[in-house]
Image 1 (cartoon, helix red, strand yellow):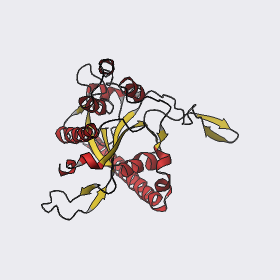
Image 2 (image 1 turned 45 degrees about the vertical axis):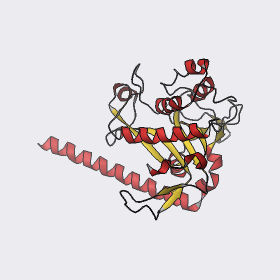
Image 3 (image 1 turned 90 degrees about the horizontal axis):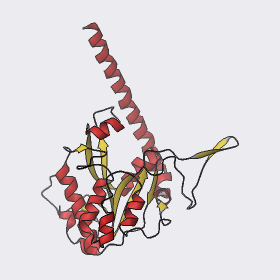
Image 4 (image 1 turned 120 degrees about the horizontal axis):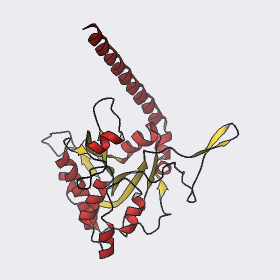
Length: 273
């Protein structure tokens, strides 16, 4: 965890990225085409606006980025790369071919994968490939020390969890989902007033994280948010990015076909046996 050294002067911002991966965007028919319906803030309306996925974004001074080294490298004098914008995100995962579903999410039959990845890589996955809606809160008004602690606790949370924790969409005690974790980490760091501390009991369900921030005094203007797609428009539209998308989709489709063939061979073997 050498990355955490000297963060007081290099960590310049932390935000909450809020992704809707549960609901489609509302559309209306306009002639022969469909048009996205916008809300009063100019952002796309969603069919189920309350359900969201929450990520923590950390931005660093570009002159003092995170330096990257090969895994298990002893020599830390020659970095192989650098990034100044990362995301902490808890993702739900399961056996190949098993997607998130309410039953397994409530019963703990899926795993929690705590990820730290570059924001640009997250944009490629969620916006370029999956075409999701991703909004971002204004930078949280935290002190330098609180920003540092938020990042360090996110790093250790990911490290300690590994790939051994079950995912629980909701439990009265022991909720472990994409929204509860970022807010639990945040609540360990920020000094709240009494009323804000009472409001901080809300964090378990992936429902309206903007409200969760507001009752903590960290989101004073609910109209002040933006689409991450706008920020990364040049990257998304770049020829190299679109070529990588085509190659990625082709590879994923090939894996799906191979899984279907393997499943077919398995069923055939069972029938003949």
